[in-house]
Amino acid sequence: MKFLRLMGTDIYLNPFFLALLALFFVAGVLVKGLIAFAIVFIHEFAHVAVARKLGITVSQVELLPFGGVARMGQELSLDPGTEIRVAVAGPAANFIMILFAIALKNHNLWDSNLGPFFIQCNLLVACFNLLPALPLDGGRVYRAFLARKKGLSEATRIAAAQGQKWAVFLVLCGFLGIYLGVTGVDVSLTALFLFYAAGREKNRAPYLFINHLVRKKDELEEDGLLPARVMVVLEHVTLGKIVRSFLPQKYHLVMVVDSIGQVKARVTESEIVEKILEGGMDVPAGQMKES
Image (cartoon, rainbow, N blue to C red; front, side, top):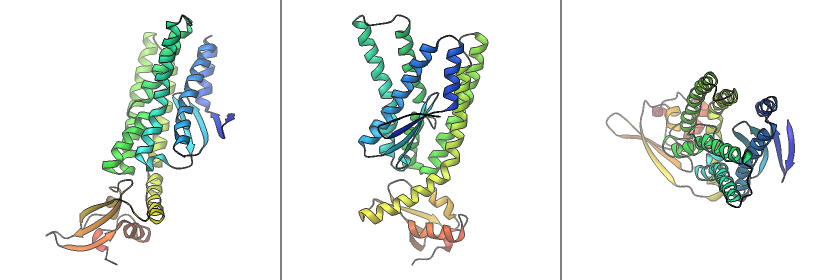
């Protein structure tokens, strides 16, 4: 549901978020629910502000129970450094709000009921989002570091799988909390949505990979240069395995060797991609010929 348009960005409310607000209303603590809504909104708009500062357009933001998802003019995962800067902006905003609340308390501008809740809610949103699990902010930072060693596609799969593992753990914690009477159903609902969102990120991995390859080709054509990375592979290794090892922001030169180490072909990243489009991911590297 579209909520408002702010600074050229459409803000949408996810049905799960509305359900959480409804739970606050039924429990008779709607004011706390609105505070939680404001905290999530500021958290997410911190991402938008940093993205805009870096020259990235943000067309849409969808608010979720634990944060939000921004639709940006470029895929941040293709640039690990940028993704890290944008990802940490949300939790940083939460910690700034905590410091602001402490300052208000020190100046006796404090509500003894809502003040502690404001700090607890900010702390919960910040710490939850810092978990190393996609699609949370910590998961995006985790993927950005992994991508530099394992490639974007594999890094996305690993971080998304972590997201689903954390979701299962939190669902169990939520049920235990309900049994002990220390939490409501909101913990389990949020965890279930995290499981769903992590699965959606995992399904996007192949598309991110394609965008990753196209983006690098465009960068090379625009700038005229890219840092290179040389790989040596045996003839039986498939092209699919090779490209899954490609790293962001590097152009790959591949040397194909036989079992005794003699070089059979020297090919570029672009030539490998063209061969995949022609014959598929299972083509062995030994079929590559120098142009």
